[in-house]
Image 1 (cartoon, rainbow, N blue to C red):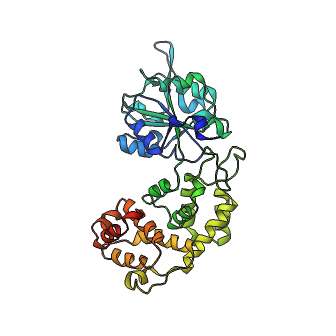
Image 2: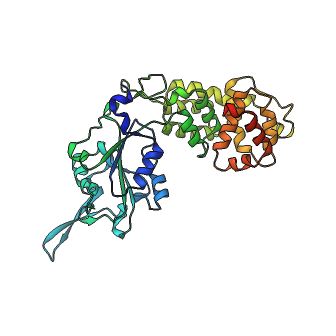
Image 3: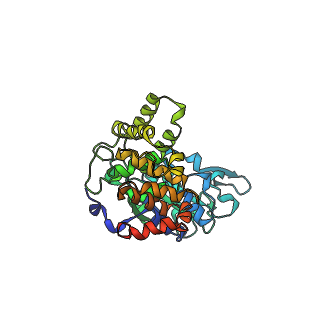
Length: 357
């Protein structure tokens, strides 16, 4: 199945989804996409850009809610009526606007979804008998019907929302994000060497790393899993190689674990950062392509005003491919790029290699 069969004109990137949601607080968006592409994790970025608090401090997992988690009846004896008030964790009782992410909305129990439905209304949205403060942002997430994980959407819900398909970020897009979000250089290097790990089955692709509806329960690589793997690898000195391999297999499958473990071993063949800084013309150059990739992404963290020129001098001893990987990544780094753009040697490299950028 190709993405065009779903509706290519309905497809957006994560950043495009964020902008649509932030700038249209009175519209209820439903983000659908493959498992692990980042639909849920953008809730914190939406809160940051909108300047609003995130209700409950995290996305609200609708699939794990029961009616009591949403609203509870309160008896008004004086007026002889029952009123429904929302859980305080939603944060709307303060009268201030909030961001609410109804995560995995399609997996919620029908009574729970029915209780949440009034929050999707354009006019006077509410939870129970309490109006949601004007300016609040509410969006939902769910998987695609084609994912084969039971995510249907009722017609009466479709009539209240704008449904968007979130495209899985490809390798260059994910790497641009990873550079500024503390992802381990080993993981970035692996993605650079194995970009097919971020292919999508919606494009008619099937490989050993990616999600596919024909085997929906397999452990696979996704942006979410790569972030988890990064955390595991960052703490690898605290456990055995056997434990590390087991955790990586449990995260994304045996093929991923075996492959990225070889990148971890490349660390042993890398020159010291000190030798690159002090003797760039004689420092060891690793032979393996994977080791060079790990080195290029690892060097980014050591870029300073007094080290960049020597790092560039060292990299000029390698083929242009590795220079491009480092320099393009450096130019996309939110803080390190400021050092690069004021460095004469970087400017000279960019001028000499304009055709490669």
